[in-house]
Image (tube, rainbow, N blue to C red):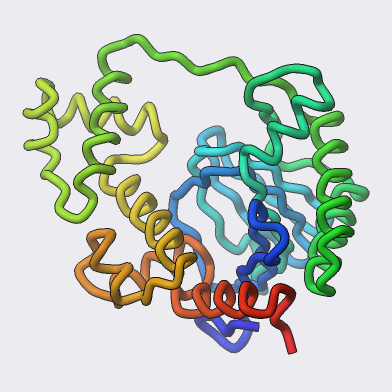
Length: 287
């Protein structure tokens, strides 16, 4: 296990070599808090002890033991302990492609599947999440993949539905999308809000308001999240944390360490070591 922050906290974020479209996190946090961020894929988690408070656009979900959390792609959220003793949980991060391929087969439809409820009481789904972890940790990719598909099928059947494509035609939404694209292009040296607004032909406050409405967070918060995402992809390919920090626009490695640990839940060095060990051995690297 990777020790994080205090002796009471631990976390492991990893992949099985034969399941490249699935990340796994098992952790116990007490003082750690996740800032507002989002994920490119889905989040399925079950709390095994304590209480996790998940902050969402519609309010806070208080997730206790047995609660199953379902968070759709690109939904901004925060997380922190809901009780003094913190919380422990098992989390799955399947890619959007995996979930939507399963949904297309089950629902005979194309598009993106979504979950209207974030926290539900579903003991069988909670058990399946832990079984995916157990199978992957034992090096049994067939079982992990099979149980994951049973889990997704159940969640879609009980809680999922096809989501209509989101199309925004208003000027503010277009400006927000263009601003996001420019920030992605200039991640190493991003413009100021004033310069960005001037380039788009709008005002700084109007752009700030439109961006937050469209993406659930202001541009600087979104940029930090995007930098961490890109850093993860670099670490996946073996890039050293110090090099990844500079490549994504952080001042130095300590800045990457701080933001990466807060958002991902483990330090970048530990994240990279797990990736390297998994793909070297081809199975669970635990001793």
